[in-house]
Length: 246
Image 1 (cartoon, rainbow, N blue to C red):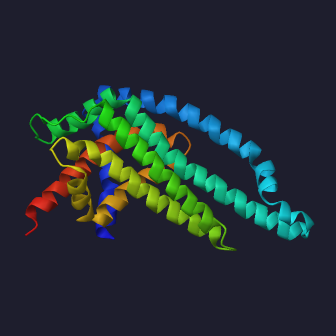
Image 2: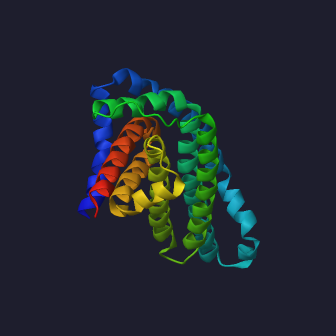
Image 3: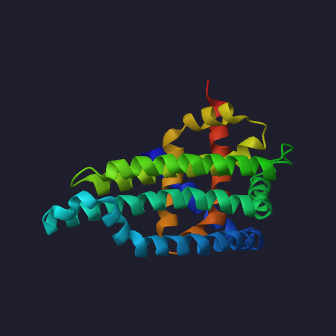
């Protein structure tokens, strides 16, 4: 639990980076705001269509008593909307990082400079960002499907679906956000995964804190620059732990 809290704390240290580089952090709000408007419109549209969608997906419930028909449709609707939030979170991060690559590159490099790191040679680049974004969205869709299936469990499905969705999505967010700082040091995919596995609780704490902030209205826009800064600090802490390990 201590490592989990430590990981969450790194996100808030990312917010503190506003004091050091307010200009770079402010620029990071622009791509986040653009993507957030598009995703918010999609979620509103889904919310409006959800009653009709759940009725279409459950024609077998038409002959049930109104109480049971309502229960199954509300359960399904909650699961579908929860899945949409899970897909939205990872897709928001993927697309925001992709279109805002120049802005976020400045943020994580400024964190590295503030923490005493010299110039990093390995470039992340647009095409690597595009590939990682597509991979992140695909993994997010898989999580959404898992969340929908769990959400269909009677009584406790909605709660379990939300908890599983936040946890798995949080891990994905931490995975994607730390990729830049780790790749800049020449670490390939398997090496990056090994570094994260060394401190799972810390990585999860950062990712879950980020995901919960994303769920707050306008939280995704406000959090994105801090998440990039905090993930750089997270990557540095993971590398330090790996270097000290026997």
